[in-house]
Image (cartoon, rainbow, N blue to C red; front, side):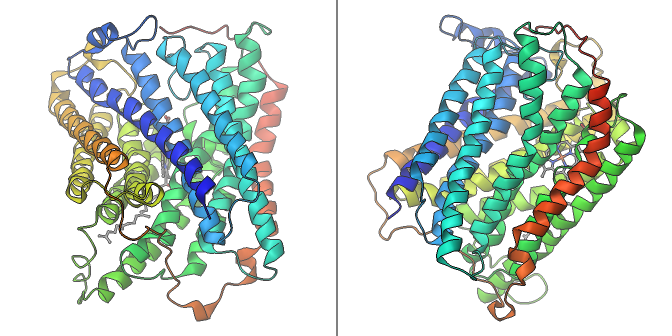
Amino acid sequence: MYKSENRMTAWFIGIAMVALFIGGSMGPLQKLEHVGINWYPALSRLGVGSVRISTYYQGLTAHGVLNALVWTTFFIVGFFTYAIPRSLNKPLTHRRVNQIALIMMIVGLVMAAIPILTGLASVLYTFYPPMKANVFFYLGLVLVVVGSWVAGWGFYLTYWRWRKDNPGEKTPFIALASIITMVMWQIATLGVAVEILFLIIPWVLGWTDGTDPQLARTFFWFTGHPLVYFWLLPAYVSWYGMLPKQAGGKLFSEQLARLVFWLFLVLSIPVGFHHQFVDPGVPAGWKAIHAVLTYALFLPSMLTAFTVVASLEVGGRARGGTGLLGWIPKLPWGNPSYAAQNLAMILFVFGGIGGLTNASYNLNLAVHNTAWVPGHFHLTVGSAVTLTFMGVAYWLVPAISGKQLFSRRMGLWQAWTWFVGMLLMSNGLHILGLNFGAPRRSALGAAPYVDPSWNPMQIEAAIGGIILGISGLLFFGNILATALSRKRVETPVEMPIAEPLHPEYGTPAWLDNWRPWLVTTILLILVAYGPVLVSMISNINLTSPGAVIR
Ligand code: HAS
């Protein structure tokens, strides 16, 4: 019934994993560079023609783009291509649309990857002007993003048909949550689309003499912050909609779960200035408004912490756990898919606390642009998201390939080594940033200002990075061996779908109604961004000539 969906999912997930493999392998090299071991000249010799990684910044660009943008976006679209039809119990109605999306995203990826690998786009994943890359880098990114919109349109058309066929029925949770995520993503990416199409491409092509870095950054962060929730929400889809079933439990409150996704739709976008607290061109009052809204965004994550843990407790107790905490050891820790996701959640607690620190204007002044920030985002996108996706892959790859997971034990080692490696690395990075002000995105191995007192934390972070590299190899080895193995699953693997604990409570109509939430989302964006954007655009300064980094 879902052959075509499975094939598309396999493509999306396969490409995502290759991106993670290449991007991830840059990570240990960065950490080694920071302790003075520079492998980039040796790596450069491995290149073919002009395709080679030769410098720290080129490697860091590949790391950020492939991990943060490609691994995530391809995995998410693939995961939704698999999950939405199953949740609606209806194959995609316009498969061609989704196939076109896949092709657009692949073409875009190749277009963006060539300039990165040939050293023509060492601008890091945030590509802040006035750093300038080859035009194909930007065009490629646009195609990847527009491709993901087209995939979203395919989902909406299917959903539209489902609503017509099932009048008055509430949307199944997994489908609703996934579609809310795609809608949020489409609104959010309007910012970066404007930045690239109107500010960057005309400048890179020489049609304008310069660009306006402040305005470009503002459009970038319009997208940049909701981008992190675009990564996180699919992990939440799994934590709410699937993991309780894997734990042998039920979803504690489906109403709260739905509310959380609607709140993320409304609040994810109007908070971008918390990435620009130190930008001189943004008036302080607007920074304060975005800071308050950022703290409002804390609420859905706390609701998540409560609801997901309560759901797992239901599972642990159903498996015989008793007492206050006795249900925790009863959870299915021997299942790598479960263990990876639960460990991801635990790391997210620390990542979330760091995020709240960042969101405070005063504390941000101390940690901004220091190693603290990569410490934060490796616990969030690098753990809550990536380790969850790895956990999902442990059931999803057998589900689409019909092959048994090659090794359960290898999967468990992988999850735990990721957990330990990430604890060490992020602890080192957080302390380096907070205590010593060590800068992020810097080739510290070549920096004259590095103080010997930084060494213990640098070494701790480097050890963490190497353990993470080993964990990555275990993941790819296991997935590749599964794909190549001949051992078929005895019974087909189904998508885990958590039942609500109290179906009798029902779902209030306002939690299945798009209009109020969409209207509030747009109004809040207009209030939080409208006046400041109007002022910045009317005072636009296309005077920055740009710099090419090699
Ligand atoms: Fe962030 C910078 C604020 C969440 C990613 N963030 C970044 C950057 C990235 C990133 C990539 O305010 C760097 C961008 C760059 O390159 O410059 N962030 C926040 C806040 C949150 C937050 C307030 N960030 C994320 C998530 C990310 C992510 C999620 C990726 C997926 N972040 C900031 C700010 C900056 C920033 C500033 C700018 C810094 C600067 O100066 O440059 C919040 O959403 C966090 C709320 C989350 C929680 C955790 C809830 C815990 C849960 C787990 C429960 C499980 C349990 C375990 C208890 C409060 C849901 C149970 C265990 C059992 C055994 C059962």
